[in-house]
Length: 544
Image (cartoon, rainbow, N blue to C red; front, side, top):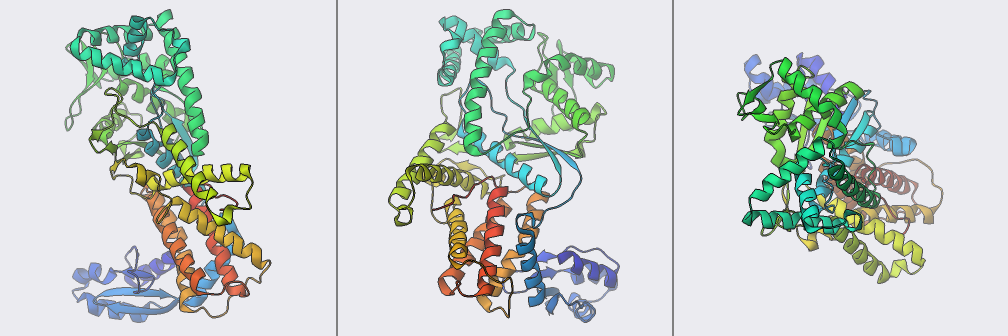
């Protein structure tokens, strides 16, 4: 409908304009077209807007108003009803696109030999939501878990394990993390340990048998642990291609960079200069590779293997400079234009006393957060009158869905760029603008429809409350498009919360059962809310 209005404006003015959502109470769409044309036409915006108002006519409007040079478009009731019926007809496929393009999304990417921390929650669930949204819009989506399983930190870990005489087979992930923390505490007093760590990584890169054995044990233990977390979070990533996957491709990248004169020698190392940014190293003076070498190899592999139209890197905002260097390096190598790459830089999870730091032993494990969320949800379910008919297994399953939904939604409702100060009460909230509130609204819709049985899909004249809900329902596609264009799942979350809030007011003030029109509105609300939660990677319990 928005596009139809834009076409009409283009026909009348010869220019392309994008409509915006109108402020509440001022129609469905608004346009500043007259302001943009005023200078060219040498007329006042108000005069131009009044002139355009007379020309812009279509059966999808109930009226068009001019207000201080702006044009406000009000959709007709028939247009709203037709769109609502389309929701009922297409159900979970309403809004589905056919983009026909390919996108590679790099997300989650935890480091091995460490428990999955709360800090990796953001990349994991924001990345998965971006994946879901693009897939629904018809993109061929390829998710890659660029596991942090290579680098100097593993030389340090191997050194400390050997120094302490530990058997890596018998160490838990938590114990491996503690060993890593001990290394850094001891290295503060004995800086020469840093050099020992570098030596062990050099051995690992050269295929030293003992270094490789310890590293492989640490990697397997980590992957087993991560898989449990991913199952809990309802996250499935297509490929686990860690940094180590590119080990046999690094030499070619280095040689190609030298041959193309993209890289040059500097103090025994090999660097790439950018001009507008600091230089970056692809080979250290001891011959070992860097993050950039491995990420360049990964970019080259993805471009060749998947032929993507777009590559999205869902990585913390603190990596902004580094990713600018990476994208520029790829362009310098002639592999792809840097415009093909997008960095979705999420804000950081922080403690009140500062940043999380595994080295300093300052972290919160995600497994602990999810466990507490499930427990809190279970306590609420046990005390709920509506849950008395649930079996023990149903209560357990519901508490898992509700608790994890709360943790995920609490993050996804924020714009990805915002930092989050870690607060147990906020993370585990089950009230207000929360995942459980949306889940409950879905279950409430299901309950009403189940109680009413079959209904006729028809709508006579809408009253103000009904029109308000239908108007919100038909904004779904626009929210979806906005979320995709801006890589912002929070747009879906915000839209869903407004719809749920308006429906619950509708539920409290209107008799739904017995009215085909209101049952149709309830069904359309259920379809859209469930789709929003599905796109955010949040399930809905059968009962609540």
